[in-house]
Amino acid sequence: MSDDSERTRGDARRPDPPGSGERLADWADGRLGIYQLAKSQMRKVFPDHWSFMLGEICLYSFIVLILTGTYLTFFFDPSTQEVVYDGAYVPLKGIRMTQAYESTLRISFEVRGGLLIRQIHHWAALVFVAGMTVHMMRVFFTGAFRKPRELNWVFGWTLLFLGIITGLTGYSLPDDLLSGTGLKFAQGAVLSVPIVGTYLAMFLFGGEFPGDDFISRLYPIHILLLPGIMLGLVALHLILVFYHKHTQFAGPGRSEKKVIGAPFFPIYVAKAGGFFFLVFGVLAVLGAVATINPVWAFGPYRTDLVTTGAQPDWYLGFSEGLIRVMPAWEINAWGHTLQLGVFLPFTLFPLILSFMAVYPFLESWITGDKREHHVADRPRDKPVRTGIGVAWLALYAVLLIGGGNDIVATKLHLSINAITWFVRISCFVAPVLAFIVTKRICLGLQHRDRDKALHGRESGQIRRLPHGEFIEVHEPLTRAELYTLNQHEQPRAYELGPRFDANGVERKFTIRQRMRARLAKAMFGPGTYVPKATPEEYQALHSGWHESERVD
Image (cartoon, rainbow, N blue to C red; front, side, top):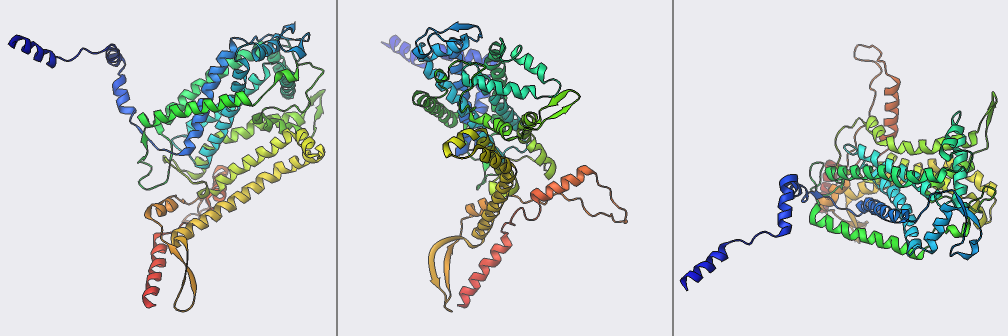
């Protein structure tokens, strides 16, 4: 009995051998240092706000695009060789078409789940570009592009630009009548480039439009080149987001050096997983119930036909609107024709987008601010920047109307010429009006914040003073609310200084310095903000109230 009891106690003290999973984890940690890395990074604190989900929508839509696009590549045939259709869609039987269009019909009507995957892929593309646009606007309006996040802003802008180009190439692959019309539009824009336009068009399309190789050339660009570049940029973007964290909105305890939020694991990981399936589910529902790009209704592309009411996806309506409303100007010189009516809009489209890319560096140069910023601005506290953003959106909305001027004219029973002239005039008037109105709204909100900080919140209670005057009782704000209203900085704009120095010698200013001073005055000078309430004003106002109450 004693020997058996000793063996039992000895077995109880001996630890159980590690399982296979634990041994694998130990083996990996000994070679990769995963445990120490996870221990130091998984508990990293991130600020939390609903607007951060906009970036997550972009990421999850991109993942859905990769998954659905990979599935579609198994069945799509990127060939312009013509065949006679003999598939399941009866209205097109006996029609000559390219193998690209025929395989698209086969995916839609004969491959199990093919139409659903096609539509999810198209909806995901639209949501991806829309999510990036709204996400970048959130970053712009809150100043989240400032140091140290300028490079990440450039990555995001590049992803947006590549997303638009990838959408154009994917939109053109089925070779239906609608996509062929869009390609003809693009080919005309390329031909307008001076000197090299013809060579570029020949290179892209493999000869005279439509050519024999354009689908086989667009296909690897759409499924390999552009997605590969975007995948690398997404990885770099996420690494920088993880390293810098999100900007946080002002609040008690939050500063440029102190972050208040939740740990990456398990809080953010759990939320991200659930949100991914939510986005995937919404895209699946859209693909199942909302028809998009019904290529069978358009028929195969023919150079002598064009679809009625041909419209690009919304993110390319900007560029088409520019070309549709531009007057048909051209210059004929030395036997050559420069088609300004196409070339100028074709050039303006990337230039307007490029302004977004360089804006963080432009604002940093104007302000001379080289500090790191981890607290986001409220849009109302930067009226000029907010006005610029709204003006850009107003221009986009106007040009989107121009890109669909025929549809607008048909639906609203208006003259297409009247709509075209409306868009031409609005291109110059609407952004200016949007800027002025937005700036005034922001200044009005600043006035309200100043009054609220000084006088408190309106309580709705009316009190009669001893001398007969009626006043509304205001409830004082908490310290947290006062901090949120007054935490923003109002730095002085860059100035050139006196024209003459202390010795009476005239100072020389470069054109660069003069330009910087004028831009700084316009963006951050007098009249661009309402001075925020100071502690002295608050104390003086409230001490006066207390003294009057004691006198009464």
